[in-house]
Amino acid sequence: MKKAVRWLLLAAVALYLVSGLGITEFRTVQHLTFGLLGKDTAFRLHDALLAPFIALLILHIGLPPLVRLLRRL
Image (cartoon, rainbow, N blue to C red; front, top):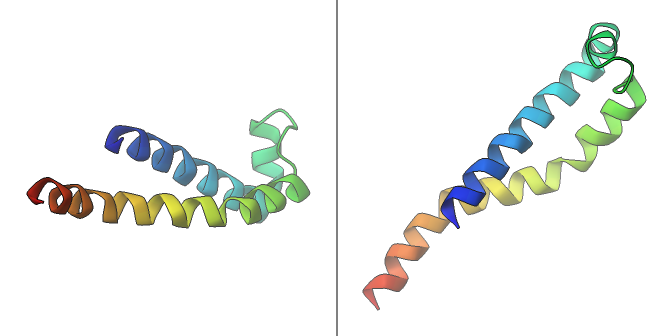
């Protein structure tokens, strides 16, 4: 479970960074992604990733203490 959360968080961070760059440096990112990630698509993706990013971050931080607590019971 912890490995899955780590990998999903890594993917979310990478997508969040790329989509953020796609908003600010849209010409460069659009060229590098062969036109797949334009400014409007990057903005929608960046906006849609906020909730999953926060949820994965909370799981990443809160899951290990929760597992330790449950093992003690």
